[in-house]
Amino acid sequence: MTHPSARQVELLEGAYRYVLEHGIGELSLRPLAAAIGSSPRVLLYLFGSKEGLLRALLARARADELGLLARVDRHDLGALPDVGRAVWSWLVSVEHRALLRLWVEAYSRSLVDPDGPWGSFARSTVEDWLAVLAAAQSPAERDTPDGRAERTLVLAVLRGALLDVLATGDVERVSAGVDRYLTKIS
Image (cartoon, rainbow, N blue to C red; front, side, top):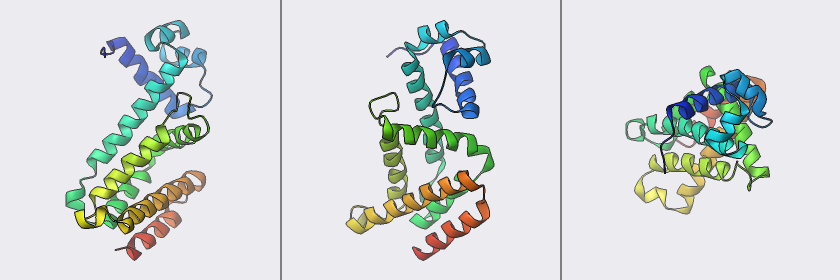
């Protein structure tokens, strides 16, 4: 695999900032190129196709997600509810809203167009998050049906709560619900 050129990295970062603000679903090359100081022809040359650019943007978004997951130090946080709270704290932070809206858009597109550039985005993110939650469980608990069910339920609660916050902006109400659930499984 070849390393991207400095120009390709620069344009990808500009395109990423653009889709964080404008969304990715109806991305049009002409307005994107104008906004980031390029041309559709250059973007197609550097990324191979619009689909190639979309894949690069999704990989960039996933890199941000994986960066979050790497920062959740499960060893210092303790049990699954503590990790759930740490993840929730990151999810409700206002500075992450644009990334999370992009994540939801890519996640849903992945479900309806699994053969397109969205590919396995949803499945991959579910696996990423479940791995973080599994690491918060004891080895004896992790590989049991109950352990798998518990981390799946925590993920479902966090994902549903995230959608609620993005739809309503009501962080206080939703956070109280998340905390109540996580307290019950403590």
